[in-house]
Length: 341
Ligand code: DAH
Image (cartoon, rainbow, N blue to C red):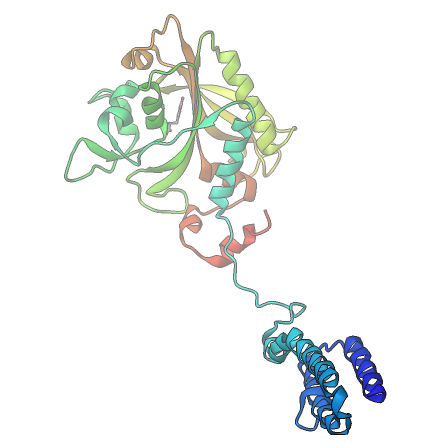
């Protein structure tokens, strides 16, 4: 009996010290203790040598030992699955499969840049529909029917409804903002516009504009100039020069066009600036009082300025893209060149 107790103690110490870490190690343990030729079976065989009066105690001892040996096995049973799981584990240090990633379109990148420059000084973004009615695209902008200014733009009319046009400029968004009647207004309106032009390197039937509108009490031409100076320096760099030329737009009075010193030759003269050193980038002016009246805004109380620029033009000046058609041909050899911008 004494020797049986000692043996069991030894085995128990061995079981305590056993920490299987894999399915193989667990199996070794199982065979050693619980297998058909294992220690548990073996030691139960020793019962026959135990004197009769001690059999009860010995039986309890052996049962406890068996339970301990089995409990250990149960505790680590989960390791039996570890092999299968291991085979499934991914080696996360391997290089991944690279999927082709698209790039931002250069026009969108330039549009985003323009918008963010104006957002920095408190303008918020407004948009309007591309199919526009006559009132918002023309009439409310001081261009009544038969106004000669309508000849400036060859317009796509919607066949089903002659009152509808594909907007010819983003100035229509000005009208939509003013009709909301919430003063003051300080918005920047990016969007696509359409004109019935023959497609060539220099003209397209759709292109993109960004419109700006600022209406408040005491807004002056000086505010317009200062805002646009700021824009030019942010967009084209500190050293870019700016000049205004008087012009005509029906929805502004006075009106102007703004030129910047040529970004290609720096003002010395080249083919882009037609050897003048200057390139036009936008139209602008003080919002015409008639337009304010069209939206029940009192021109004695409120004044405003507006401007509109072509995104393709700005992109051409920044990246020297010399053919407008490239923007809509979806040629990745062209588009990829803007990947890292
Ligand atoms: N809508 C004009 C165009 O498409 C651009 C323009 C000129 C917008 C003067 C304005 C402006 O807001 O004040 O050519």
